[in-house]
Figure 1 (cartoon, helix red, strand yellow):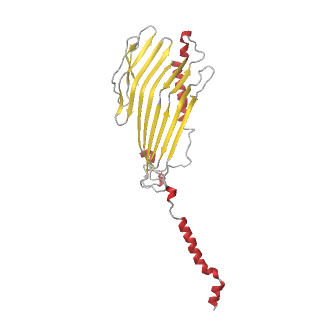
Figure 2: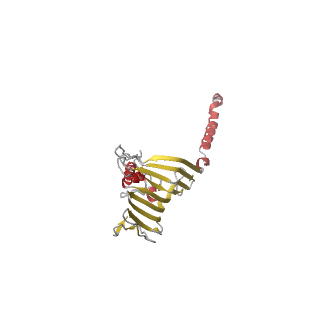
Figure 3: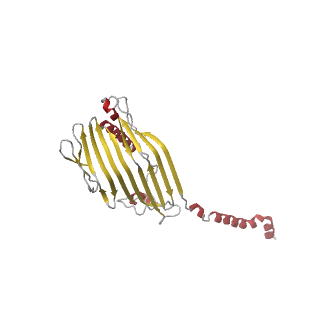
Length: 306
């Protein structure tokens, strides 16, 4: 009798197992795998910037020429991001860089057109292809980038510059390079260690030894860069004098090496002497070694190694 009375007086004890079962079922439902969290997605980006005007910054005073100016008609950026591959493309329309001489530099009225010089690039196209793999990676880990391929196609570079104008451009480029490569002001990652290609911190990876860490993804991934140049036509001028440098079609390919074809040579002109031209046909460039014959007006030949 007492036991039956106790059961009637405590009905909550009877319903407690049922509530625990229902709560466990709810937890099981919450812990079920949801494939929607790991579904693949694709991103397509198209960016078109027109009428760009910029400057190559450098230290300028009243006694020095102003900063070179860069004019760009159109800059296009495209990206196609997928699970196993990312494709990038940058297209630059004809680019014109103008620079001027020192304002205190005096020339004759017949040579005032030399006060402003220019460099023009007919076009530039960069294509990048990054490849990713999910082999031996969990769903919560990022895919592994195992290859990065780049193809750079440069158009014809032409221009007319004086020596001070060329120095002005080089000074601006030096300031830009020093700013980019300044290690003192570079950003540092708050994490003091790197992740290896297994997805674990390098000090904790089983492949890490006392001699070296397990390599990162950037260390072991395959990289290939292929570049081509349509041609160069540069004129270094001064009052009554011109030095012309011409080259056609330069290709750099890690699979076939480097090669150059067609015509190659230099032209030197002085106001008291005639043109002198020395063509070099079908010259082969191996591993970046380039020989240029210079034939000045006094009929001596000098060999320049670039």
